[in-house]
Image 1 (cartoon, one colour):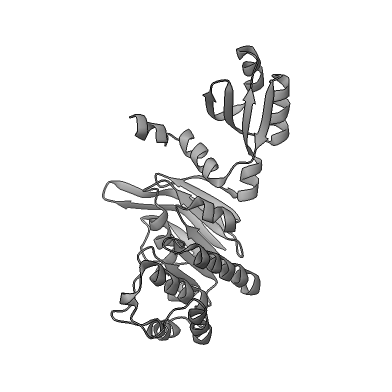
Image 2 (image 1 turned 120 degrees about the vertical axis):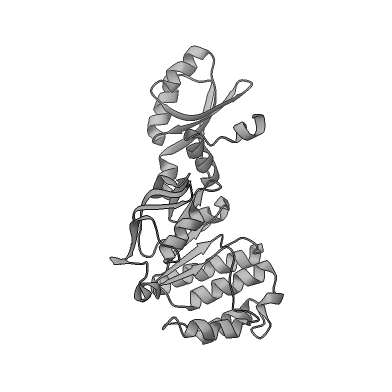
Length: 301
């Protein structure tokens, strides 16, 4: 298990990570999402032991990470900006990591590179952004670590390769209990693969919840009311996050159980209403609007 306890990190007067506490269970895919500048990349670097927090601690299986080589052997970190040794090839990078990670499987790496159409003897500097990302991911999977920390994993990958990477993660989770932590702006990709979501905003955690539970506890309703009085009855005591109206059609996002929301709307006797499924992207927008991050502010000023 990875535990983040009251982490703090500032750069000059910017609080990149502000009292962040999270628990990441073994064998689950943890998605880290957030607004621009929310601190996702900084948080991953702290978890990997790359940078030292100003306060708090990261523990992996009850062992502090920073300045602890033994613990770091259980973690593979893939940054958004991958670094490779100058003029190196994928095969040479495999040799390098083989000397760092005791469980690194070079034969598996070479086989996977063949499957992904990667020439292991070609200089990585000549690769496209997507191919470099593929090499990093395959190195991470073959390192044999218990945890893999990925910053914008799917950025630059074509749809076929993205599906292949997801399948590899699923196999590694099933076969050896790999725990991926994935930070991404691509919420639709995370929705397909993640079990748990941590949502960051301005360096702090808005929520950390099982994705399935998150969807159960938030509802999107489309409805038409006969009168404003009926609308008031339906929404009385409801925790409304977003309420939009186009003509007579209302689209309302509400925090609450489905049965509770349905009972409230039946009380308002609407002409029409239906409860629709919420995507992770819609949940993200709803939760961040609550804390003042509203796209309409950028568009309308």
